Image (cartoon, rainbow, N blue to C red; front, side, top):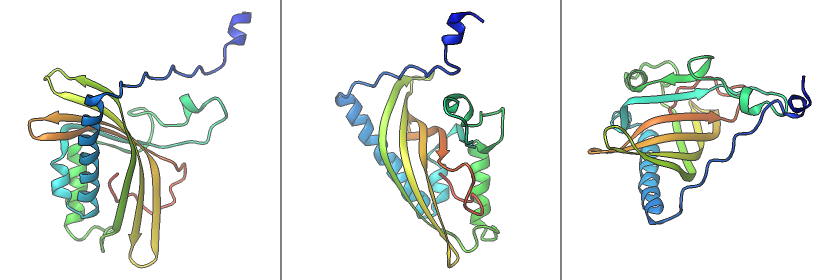
Length: 198
């Protein structure tokens, strides 16, 4: 092995993504998307699942990787499982999310009867990219953090904390969620199930 190769660290951190200019367009778009995310949280907290499904793009990708404890320096490459390659908590599209919602709405869902009481807080909303897709629609990459409280039956209560990496698309029918990656900060799930939506 050459001296150069020996001096190279095992993992080289990726260069930071340049921040979007904090101009009027940024803040106007950010306000719209914040309202979209707050409306989404209200729809889910109020169990208005059919209305929530209408805010999802038909080509939605909804992914929650599992998280591992890894050695220092290996976080970038080994901490999170990879979509389509390894196990994950969720790897879904709009169709399967719709089926999960329909199951809850039957009233005979084993983990959601009686229905959970859920409260979502969304914060730290920032835009990381804005682009135009092949159909001429504006797509915005958005990061946010969440805290979700879930209470089931009498004494069961769970907290979920993490980050979301979304792509939101402006369409003729308003903003639609086109992509969501959820990173929950637990490597062992402390809740008995994942019957809620993130």
